[in-house]
Length: 463
Image (spheres, helix red, strand yellow):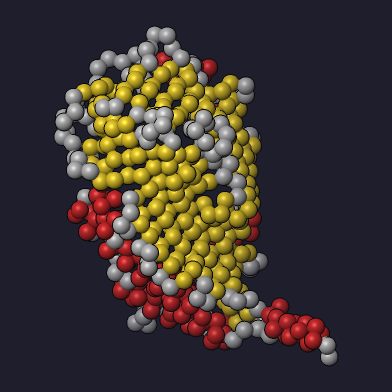
């Protein structure tokens, strides 16, 4: 037999032989516990990171909150839950519960008595009845994929992927999950459930180990999510969310005492009726089209270094909200500054200081005047106005200090411009532009205002 033929035979044999139920039970419980516990211990270690403490305090998290609610609980709180889960896993993945061995996989019936019996041997009858009516089963295959199946048709709700010492993930195929959710609801209500919407796409949540005390917890849109629904009014609505991996993630590096939080979504589109968002006229058939170019940012806390924000922005194009040919709202962030901004923040005696690179610029248009009606009043500043706000310091670093420890007086300053110039304007000749240059302290303006946004600030004496 040739080497290639031998390899092929081994591969076929490995897939033809179903895994051992005891191995499945052991790996499901032990592998999950090992990975989750180590990740939790790594997160618990962040309680002692001095830079994280100072950064949270600067952002207004009190010392008391940091010492209690803003801390990762002790890992011992996890152990009891894991031990209880292991007992249930052993009962589910038993030889007597196997219903199918085809295709190199094992399918186990999930019985109410196995899931709803507590550690003291007491059975919860209502729980057991609910589980049995849902006709749950678990299909174990590969290395190691556990698919939770629902109903007589074995519709897949999600798949739990376990890779020993590497990762744990919950993966949801929305098209498959739709049928599973329908089966669950039918089992609970006893009635056939019919949906007037469809969903497609694939999403996941994943815990990944990169090295010792080095983990990432993440969520992702693995393939574009699409949503289609026909309402009771007979009008179709559609929505799409672009693929994004990761959508959100938290990377903890214990040895480096570094935490990196990343968030960002891809393009989002929605098409429906205006009254889905504005309830001025429930009989209106005005269309609504929403386009979000995306958004994202990264936060980095590293012990001994200044906390920083990196690559914050609202996508690479103008985000809009339209009704037919009418532009109701649009926004651009830093369109002349590379469309992103980075910043560092440092604790100060009065609060915290932000240093921006390169600076901030927001261009927004609000055109809700076309929606005005006897039942929907549009404020003057929202009727047809284009706003520009910027905080720049050409050749320097724009910098501002926020006073989180300021007095409660309404005319007390909330911020101090250290470097740069803040400008606010609107394309309305009746409203003059406002400009504040360093050094200047800012407070909220509480008097009569022709425009809520441009005239919202006033310069006051610095403390």
